[in-house]
Image: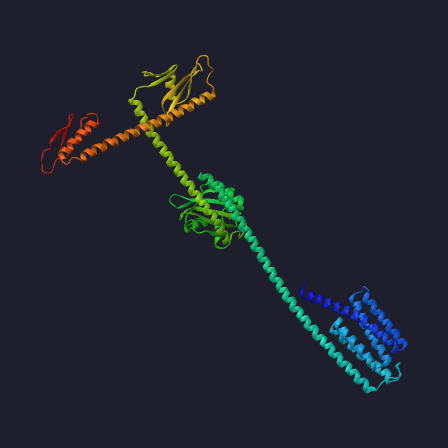
Length: 567
């Protein structure tokens, strides 16, 4: 509803209320006036007053329209004025009724209607004055002087003056009222517009907050999911899929920098066009090609649209529907690892606020990539360590087996006996050579290899009695488990023996050093050293030689009992 219609509605409501109040007062005071006229007026006029009063009561209590009530009221007032002119001329209530009719017409309709009734009143009084003064019409109340021309003119002008004042006052009031209404409606309209703007802003902020909340929730979900991956390839592929599912981007591409930091290489993507690019080995020059290259060099996120200077970036036949693109650096510990590239089919799909939100996801992805790289490096180091330790262990067992004869033990009731056979039974030899469990032809004998670090150092042969059942799978698994435990025990024993030997050597060196430190003469130190080393090494021949002195002196020869020492 516009301002003018609202103003008219307000005026109409006021006029209806005013008319209703006026009619109720007319019914109340009209009854008093009717009783008074019964004693002061002629019968014909009393009847007229009764008819008027009945009409007023009817339009008050009956359900009639506003216009009917207003027109009827103004018409009754004009009729009472005419009746007054015929009864008392200018002396009675005729002018009061006419002024009331003019005022009511101005109030109930408009001030223009008041002017019309005023003009009508002037014409009416002129006609009645001419009729009465000309003797053509005689007033019914003979006790009242009809007056003269001057009196009629004077009183008619007074009526005109009062009518003009009343109508003009009502005009001014109605005009000011209309202006006040317009100002009020204008102010109300401004308030409504401002309210609408505030509601739009609130709705926009609410939508923005909902979007940010959903983005943060999606970031948290993706970040939580990618932490469980340790394989880099699987991590990147699953991340591109999760980002697409949670954010609905048209294309998600993850670029990693090569070893020389010269190219950003596409490593994972979700779209069909991205898969074609991935198969071609798509890569972008750092600092030169596209916003990915720009972000990889500047380490700052960037948004590009398909208009203006950035439009050249969207000429990609593999991704023809792209209208907006955003690239974010993958940075951890101040080191850039790559770029996260997301594209949308909607224009202006990304804002600066989206950068702040999605940068959190990019940082989580960078940390996950670094963790995957560290995990892979750790796995390689552990594997290298295992291989190195396994080689050391194999070499130690080869040395042990080379220096010791074939030793075997047989467990038969009532006890265990040791055997030292020059040859090894075929089944045991086969188990050692193949490293696999060997089942005998009779089904009662199995040979299980004993392996340490992948090297077979021996075997166990297990044989059931002739009346027993063949080896079951469960019994075979038990034998293999026992073989593994035996392997661990033998390795532990070897390590313990090695540690004991190292302790003995360190103790020997410590003892020799202690005895040598008690000797102060060089000749005695050399002699003591040669002797101690010879004894420690099993009476071996030890040679101790110094370089020739600068003055040309000849070296002196010393002996340790098993060999010779030279100084």
